[in-house]
Length: 157
Image (cartoon, rainbow, N blue to C red; front, side, top):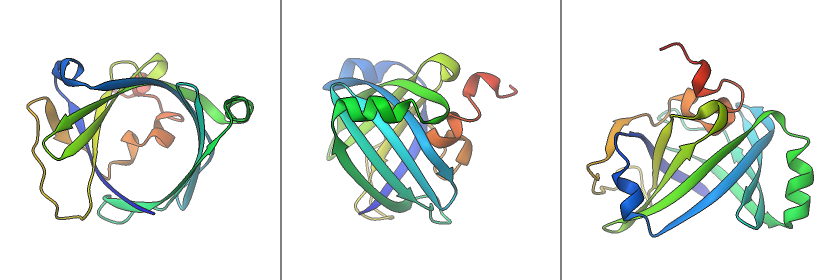
């Protein structure tokens, strides 16, 4: 139940042509405490409730527990969420032995595209596709829980 991932900004739309799957996602947060985050997500016709623990100092890992819940329950819980609900499309792109999840954000976060790759260990190597840009692992402003409170469109350029 420990999630290890690295996050990157995305520099082109090439990933869309290489994606084997994409899903529309709406997600909100019942809690955005630094020590624990509680997320509600609608992904296609599926609902999910996720609890994440505090991120490690290097930003690479944290506890994650996720449970599928009925769609109607997820819809009801989204109405209770703090601040704005995040809207995005997630593209899944296979690169060698890893799958990158590329999130293209909409609404108040439009213009932001972030790729994540899950790893088995902190030192695991992986192939970086040409559309990966700057690494933002551990930068709090790129966490979805923070984007719901401080959207990308309101950042000072």
